[in-house]
Image (cartoon, rainbow, N blue to C red; front, top):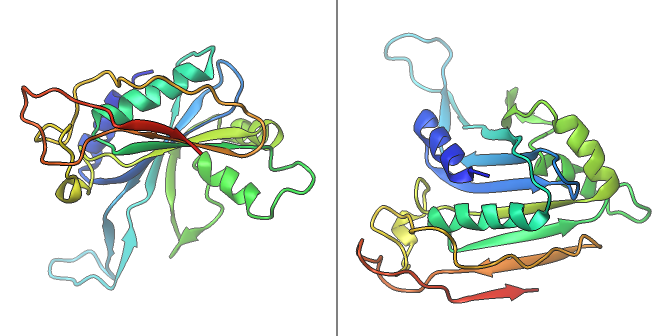
Length: 223
């Protein structure tokens, strides 16, 4: 699952820095996963597109939701692909949330909205503009399946191609914010029963590494 290539292709096409990246999957083999890229930036709203016209409002650049159709037979493989992408793009950690079905009895009222957002489907916009531009033809089916079976959501904030370079005091990073892959951490198998959160931490406080330096790992926590 070549997530790094997909992310960097979008960075090159959008020419905007990233705030964060999310990946959503249902616990069913060979189903698509939804990769959502959250951008930092604003679209200038003008009354008329004429030279010298001043913006009258600023609208956030919409996130990009992409469907990844590569086959997989084990959630650990999706987990490892996400860890590799986050590691190589300089993220400090990866947070994985296991969410139960939002149609179960006793589910909180916010859970259906969280499920929609995880798969890049926002039911509202800002100033008539979408919050997410989606290229995910199977998102409706995935949302219906997630509502019945639950889903997993991974979140990380990349330094490479992101807005975090100025605050990334991490000795494992190369000067451009990347790390050499693959990620040395191994997945913790998800339980897919109820709510559960796993945090994979990597990095080392300090100045960015020189290109010839090695990389390290601090720890991996389960909470």
